[in-house]
Image (tube, rainbow, N blue to C red; front, top):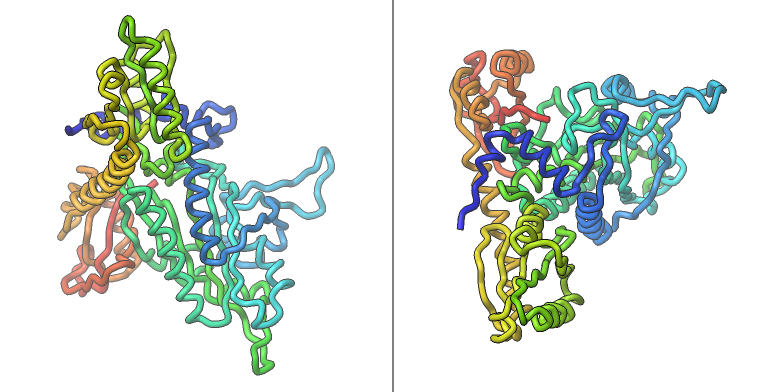
Length: 477
């Protein structure tokens, strides 16, 4: 069965905002612009995503830490490129009560300048390396563009990891490990994305290079859900983070950092998997994986209720499950409610299921129904959940592939972006050409593929000179 996504595609903003409100994901009416209240359902999903990510980080020896939210102006100002990039976005703390502080403080926009003064104290020898830490925190950026719930906010929920290594080669391997970790999580969530190396002019401030995960969105904009940066020795030289080598000489550490946006990942899950019925959540992060709904029938009320409880008890140790036993709500209304919330599997129990000792399973992604004997229930549920997750992943990847369009002139790019697609073009590498393209077509050069090799063999779409790279162009949040 195919479920419509017409509303999602034709009017994404209205569809998305309605789901955030009705499914109790977030509330955007908090009286400070750009700050959200994460409601019970939305926050539980974020917590499940966080646990999924942190498990993979800690399996690869990243140590969980927690650094302060406040950064001194002295530390923040040390890395010139970094401060130049963030200075218009940071929140400054100038007073404590009526007393002006001797030194202003910054609410962390990212944590490099908070962490490196401590690394300078902790790392003294090659035995202290590699250093690998992570923290799940909020960062604060005064977003000057129009704010959008989950996509563009001023309080950003994310996990950031920071590592230090003895050699450039080890740092490169760490970048590969970070990409692998993020890819595994996004793939488990069924999110389709382009893995792109950002152009030089769009890399993270202070980085040697930056790799980003750009997820597709129904409105044609891409949503950056994660980034991985090789910082080389740029920050370690500024903060004098050195280590003594085995031969007794000293050298600067090579560092990396990477960030995983929980808010934007939640947005990507809703945007990519949702349909005109509401949310569709992958089984691993759905707050409720199974809902049992009694179908009342006169004279069978107690039998149906008891059988629902039996099924609940049979499954409760292996799944996140609930019974919707509200007496004043009709089954059809319950179906609508749980479909809106994106619960992967609905179990319907009526008189025939009680009599035959079966259960009717309805999967959320396509609303297909299947009646199974109670003795096969767990096997069938496991099979359905696995198939649902694979289906979400496959559909999302296919949708992304269909969005990419080869373009050979600026009008092609304009038309592709107008049709909510992503343009694939040849580019000479000149930033001026990128600016012309952005001004005339309205899209940004997002970067080159970092997961596959694509060789340029034509002319730059903008200036006509020999191309150096194949790049992807899109509007972005």
